[in-house]
Amino acid sequence: MPPALSIKGLSKRYGDGTLALEDLDLEIPAGSFFGLLGPNGAGKTTLIGAVCNLIRVTGGEISVFGQPGTGMAARRMIGIAEQEPNLDKFLTVYETLLYHGGYYGMRGAEAAERAEQMIDAFDLRAKRDVEAPKLSGGMRRRLLLARALLHRPRLVILDEPTAGVDLELRHELWRYIRGLHEQGTTILLTTHYLEEAEALCDEIALISRGRIVARDTAEGLKRSHGVDTLEEVYLRTVAGGRIAMDQLEEVE
Amino acid sequence: MLKLWKQTILAPVISSLLFMIVFGLSLGDSIAEIGGFEYRIFIVPGLIAMAMAQSAYSNNSSTIFQARNDRYLDDIIAAPMSARQVHLGYLAGGAMRSLIIGIVLTALALPLTGAPLERPLELLLAVLLTITGFGALGIIVGIYAQSWDNQSFINNIVILPLIFLGGVFYSVGRLGSPWEQISHLNPLFYVVEAMRYGFLGAADVSPWLSLGVVGAITIALVAWAQLLFSTGHRLKP
Ligand SMILES: Nc1ncnc2c1ncn2[C@@H]1O[C@H](COP(=O)(O)OP(=O)(O)O)[C@@H](O)[C@H]1O
Ligand SMILES: [Mg+2]
Image (cartoon, rainbow over all chains, first blue to last red):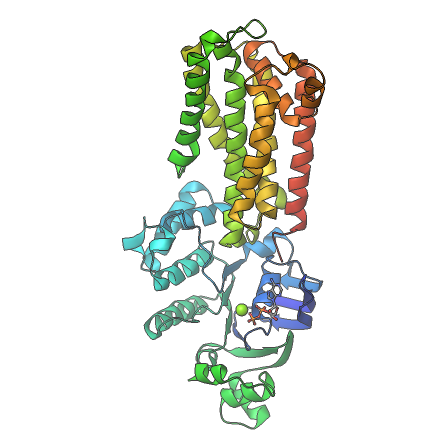
């Protein structure tokens, strides 16, 4: 089976000159639960944007389950929940899901049925006809995830789904994502919570300044660096000399 | 489906009707006929054109700007739809409200003023070209806009004055030199003329000229909007 995601020589320079990704290679096997770990500004969101057609790449090639990343077949197989909730404030929960189904080529009845399923799966029944601005932060996160999964993507990309989320919701989101992975969906998760990556992911890539600097299982990373915790690996690799206090705090 | 219909449909319908009543029915008797039409009839096509053009423009510019600003546009550009499909979707969405406004206004204004509907085919063509052109203009402005003000600025400073100066309330032909010739440089003059010909069966310039100019401008604007979608310019960083 071709890899879920294959990235070769990916570069992105933004209009203001920032080089966010530099000749990056990454391959994610089908069926894996893959963690992309790195500090703020490392290039995680940019990498995801490149895979999902959300940015104009400067160079490189992407394929999704063997299909060219620029084509419709690839896009159909990807579901993405972005870092910041991006919901249409005039649409209700149900309409948000229904429209999304339409964008992915579902017929009206099919999209409606699927939207209702997702509303139940993500515990949004009571808020079905409520517009996004009236939802709590946790509900918005769940809706974002429901929308990403509605069209049954084979590769689900979650950009810091648990950043700034309380402990209870974080565990709830983990449960959903784990369940999804058990059903065979490939997951690409970005995070800067190390314990989260260690608890969930089969494999971890560390990204720093637009490059992948290490890649292995959590155990493998610890072994090759001769340390006991992922935190130490992280500090030695991606944080380099500039260990920010806030990052240490986030590790808890 | 038609969210915000009070702002986007009811409000423009009422304001156009007010123009028809205030200008047409109250002033109408004191103003002489223009081109063989009573004043209250003469102003109907231009007012309907104005309401439809503004609606097609402002619905699209605000829809696109909002989608960019709140970034749910990502849900659309990540989806398996070609740039052309996305463009067409926005054009059709904007056109729908505009068409409803046009139909409602026509249904109310004809019995109210006694205006005729002489050339339905030419009118239909004029309407389709106008709402497509202004819809595309709305898309372009929505894509370039940096703030909410930008797009209302274009509406208030460009579209509205040009359409007034395009002869909604008077016949440009009566202005005399050089204002008549200057008015002929105003692209919105041809929008008003094309619609007027559709309703009244008569206008200052030939319908083929006005439809030709409106058609050429519409094609140019649609091509520009398509280019923005295809290249992702300003839609994607
Ligand atoms: N739209 C943009 N324009 C210019 N620079 C950007 C833009 N988006 C991100 N960057 C820059 O690119 C780098 C990578 O950012 P990002 O991919 O968001 O990192 P991460 O998601 O790992 O925090 C950062 O230096 C960031 O400031
Ligand atoms: Mg990010």
